Image (tube, rainbow, N blue to C red; front, side, top):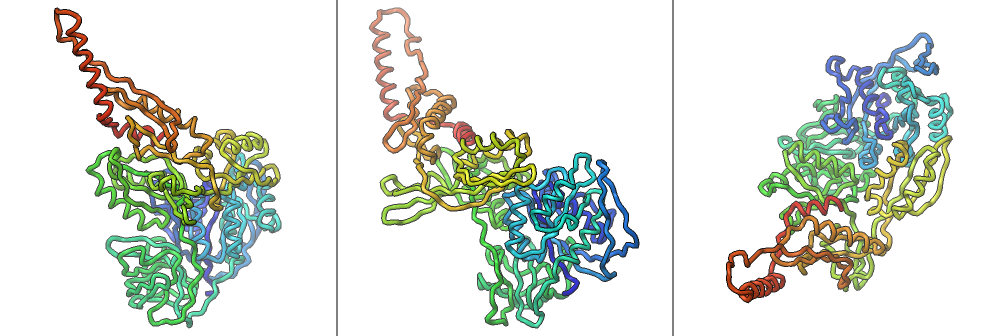
Length: 618
């Protein structure tokens, strides 16, 4: 155990985590040089195309420190010098278990899961961008878990790098001396050896007792259609091998271990896994719900085993409805959602259907990027053509008798007479920006119902803390922030709580009939503007009929806005020729009576394309 180190790499998005992992794989010769490719641990095509990590990726490396005999220096294009340190380690063999983590705020739950399985973390910062929102957020997550943090400045060889400036800021954040910050270029390999040495020197070896009953933490899992559930585990006590009878303390499920192994980075079977090691267990379970992330694995023969500290189940914060453009794809669509949910604990779905839209699913996500990734995976991996409605949030409705109900869509809302109050989710937002954009950012947040809390200054940058309704935050806030800051501002957000809101349910009536698919929950102050916009858009897309069609936006019995689609004109007198005027008048009177009857009993067939156009632009 003394020669084992468990660690992860944490950083803001696009600061070079995957590139640094590539250099580790190259230096430790875990992957042969001829087979190494960029972003080697990122296995999904979406990860490679976008240059981001979506899922955590564990790997085991064997590290032999190389003893350097002399000190030397390197320079970047700004002629800044960085000392390449002498190694202080003996020529021993170390087992390094790395978990490469995502950087985007939507996947912070992946980061928290990896931190629970490690004793240390590399905090990576881009020398051209400096400390950003997720740099701070991930650092605080690591400190909460009591992990040893190694500060590293990356991309020092770029022409616009400012390593000295950002090195000072990073040292101040972590609370270390400036000389303890390691300056590297993961792309070219400069000083990466020093990071490996720091991992061995500063990150403590794991603790535990091999003679105690087995305790292993499930930090991730995936489902293989041939092997069943594969649990990614970190062993804290005891050991496990093929053929052992395992038990999960939370679900109480039991099974026989079919295989144990390590990540090299592909699955590599071994005889057993012991204290301090990270690896996988082929559990034999047929459903992922039987082996939940955060659960503790032990043996059936063990008793009075104390569960390990797990982590909270991720709670979806954003909801949207998915529909197939081709109704014949419904079965394939349902099967695809089931497969994705097996490997993504944060993704939820349930069926819903409207007569106007057909059958679809109401899906839950951690954020907008999570939604976008799931949509692209469904379209690419399962060849589906999808329509996604505008995202919404979950509301807490207080009912008569002090009852509470969580609803994820307007259609689930109880009758107005039962509702005492509606509460909406609020988030804490941390905006990290150069100081020159301070004024425009504060004005932007006001428009999104944000409440200012405080400001902190870090060298030439500023951190703004706000609280904001999640529904407002989803309403294109991030794009607005990027536009007014020329792309320099970044942000992080955390769920706070549910707070009372002045919210109402607005319904749309077409020809006097309420259309359930076009109901929305909006702030009371916005009903006039939003009501006028919706009925005006509907007027453009609803085809004309032989009778007049009214379109109304209503809140309860109150009509907020109204538009009318005029009746299509049909010349019923075209077949007449000759005769007096009374013949025409008789036909026109008959037509008028027919239109009045149609208006009373006629139905409006609104095309699906019209619904999707409104919902997507909402």
